[in-house]
Length: 327
Length: 292
Image (cartoon, each protein chain N blue to C red):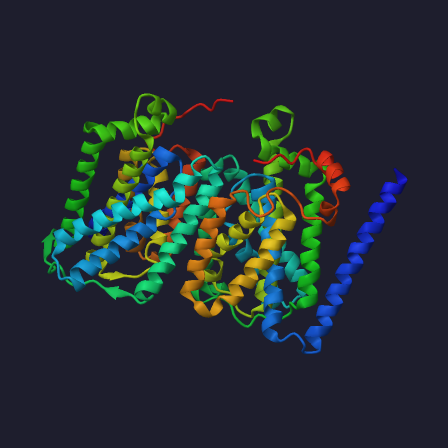
């Protein structure tokens, strides 16, 4: 038992060292000018998209609730954080925390009434809330109205975004593997059975929704402090769909799937940038084709790990993760 | 009072458009339980076909309307066959994502085809204004209402008096039982998509002559709002979609009429949330007990 614990610690330290090395190399290359600003921008976008996709995956993939208003929470976080640095002149970390918490509170407020709804109705309700949040921002002149906020200090950089992305993935994957996470997953598998087993389904649904919204707010804060300006239209319907596509393509219920999809789609989107309208046509066709031939997404509910490649440990994993039943 | 009456008239015109689009949503949802996100874009395609017929071919209003409806009916069937039929037994979310994909494809495919610029509809009908008690009604508003009501009556006739309508009602009630009774489910679903798309196309042409301007992304907002209208009336219920559409149109016109036009969009969604929380089955819906 003790040795297993030690092995786990060793493995985690190993992962941390690899991440630190990766961060250091990229950081050095950015500062040394080897990575030009265009590639840096895409690295930043990948980080933000990973945070968004992984946090939405907690709601859609692990909890089985269908939310399509994620950009709304991102907007709350972006505006919340920008207000703190712009009007209150407080440090960046406090701004990010405030934005994330504000988005989390909105998540509770939206989640409590709407999570009683199921399936399509919930999807439409979250979409409605996303649009309401955007509509409210457009109507408040103090925060820039329809023109948006500009002149936000550029405080987010590769270091912030890299480590906050790592933090997000860590928190959400640990949550999923905890007792609470198991309860959350059981709701996806069968809500009525979960309730019969004594799981407070409302509590866990709101919990997953709130955590997801909180990290969307964090991503919003980072977005605002990297791109100087934010406009209500940045966080429209289409942005929510962008995030949703990442989650679905990667596999609902697979954190590594979301990460892979976020990286792949950000790169695809960047490389198709010159084609303008054609980019979205290709994007749409890709979406349709993937859904027709692989509706469970790239990874399904499986996680990518290096032990996947050795057969022995694969069998062991299979037994341990008996809960991950394909939908 | 005059403002109220004037906005009521405007609201009914706008509501006719929403009601026509909402009918397609509601019928498709009733039969395959799919929120057809591409429906708003079929309406956009309908508007462009109307533009093509009137501005380039020089047709008059009625032939343009009919042509647009027929072509969109075919488009609706093609979308259903290519994108939705293979996913009929897949998880619902897969079908929903596909619908979003089709929607994006239509929007940006159209943008490539006709460029993103706003097109001005030709003056197919010269505007005539009638004044009653200080309220202005244009002949276009009258035509919108007349066409909408005529199409709704036709739809009621099809659904309640014809074989295909009977088949549609049977399939939406119980797909398997309908199949056992010898109803061709695939054809019935196709017919539903065709009828819904034709109604959306009619709405597109009507919007073209009413507002005069069309663009490739015009379907997004009306599509969402028509969905709100369908939910408001009770999704899957045809008279519900009609009522919901008119109600939503009137509320929106009132909000804009009393100087809060920027709140027009949020108000529609606030209505949606209230309905979903208070009575998710909609105004005309009945409670169905869930079986374990």
